[in-house]
Image 1: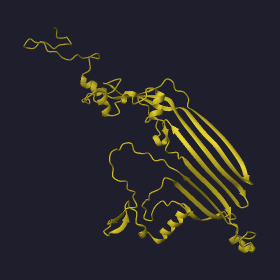
Image 2: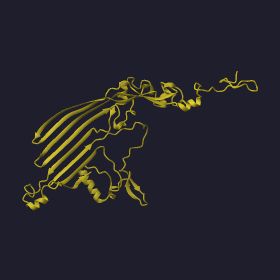
Image 3: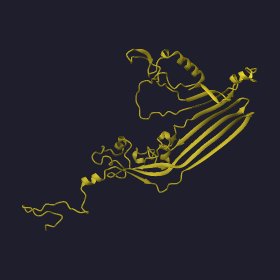
Image 4: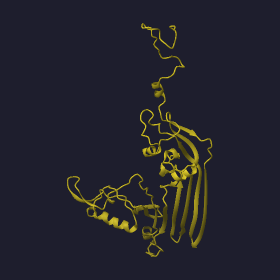
Length: 362
């Protein structure tokens, strides 16, 4: 071989030719350089060629009747149907658990460079998760709305609303993360044979169609305005003079309130034997923090005997009015029931538009 040959070095003193790597743009890349350039498990994202426009169909059917003068009752059926919503279809993913891999293959878990890709269905060396952006998601909302309204007449006006809601969706809702890339549709190869539907429509309904926990099932709202019967020409103090009437007459009470139910998601990752359920705030303990021991309740809340007398009195008043207090005087939070409530009322003189201190708020 000549000294200009690119495939071998000149003959050594022993007479044996020694090979050397080829050079140039067409030379093969070393395995180390290839591994540095393309890491196993690259995520790929593509677009579905069929991407229809998202649609929302709304409907309502409402009836109303004036039961007494200036007072109307309404009842309505309302709904929304969302179609062609964003979804991700996921391919080439690892089994959902090691157990699925053992049952399906009977092999130990892969190790080494391709441990992250060796268990995938479509490609075991280069590609990782493959995501296809599609628009086959859907949502359904149905509600029953009841309303009572009295227009201002004879010193009183009010509105009352009740809404019964049922909201379901295949994903991208706030309670499910609000991200269509997270709530994707898996393929049957990730699960045990026969445990996961084969068609996309059945998989979508089985795996992703669920309730939106951020929308309460029951929601009640109300507001009111009432003229106090005080002052000149009213039932109380009707003979008051003009000067005195400027002080005692013309007062109103206005307020609003709301209450709604809440959803609780049950845990799906714990099983086996558990200790008895303990409701904190009811178990007496000795709290020795700060150096001096005192009687308290588990969960950090002080025993009722240790609370100020005024606070205990306000709690009794609040309980009678159905109010929920947000916390104790020391700032510690309290256990809240499944229903959230908020009430507010103010008294005001309409002649001066001067809103006085709130009567009660929680």
